[in-house]
Image 1 (cartoon, helix red, strand yellow):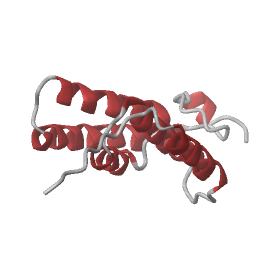
Image 2 (cartoon, helix red, strand yellow):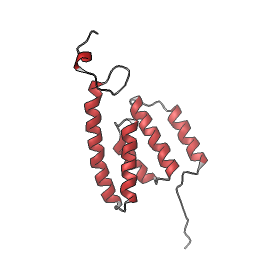
Image 3 (tube, helix red, strand yellow):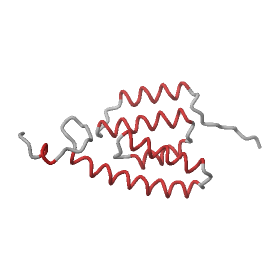
Image 4 (cartoon, one colour):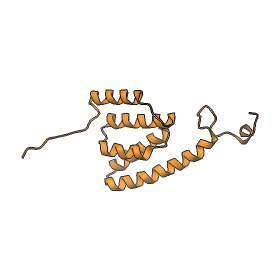
Length: 130
């Protein structure tokens, strides 16, 4: 019986071009910050050669995160794998970290100004003239 060797690397220019076209043309119904986070994560998974199943788990855990937090989650996950954790253990601690990041984002969103900036507004600004 013959076997087929398969390797997922970030060197596939056709895959990178397809991602660029898809993310640019698809009519997303999510916030712009989440859209950017997911786009960055897909590009990173291709560039760094993260296998599709692991990338899918990261994408699932990143729903609702902004680009900065999703990047932190991806870095955390790849560090767990690099440190020799099993996939199951890495997935478990990454899911826990994702929940922490989502809680942080949920607390930040109500304090955003209309420009989408996530800086916390002072009580004086919140109570100021509108």
